[in-house]
Image (cartoon, rainbow, N blue to C red):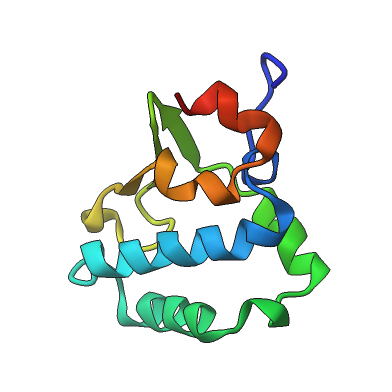
Length: 117
């Protein structure tokens, strides 16, 4: 990976796995923050989760590839959302964290050795 470059999801995850990655992340957000997310946001996530991956078009995949609200730490990947991004300011920052090993099959092959032991 280049230095001084904003890492986007499309740089890390195989293109055909972008939606699957975000679906897992959205499921975790609902599970973890259903008491803090507005009902309309939860419903939007549920509609997104209900769509089969094959219904995702190239434009949507391009948008998913630009997703940059995540960071890597040791062997984990975490996403973070600022107040107002998904819920009210009072909800605060919302975050998810997963083991990179859980996503091994989704990560671009050229990065696996660099990211996972």
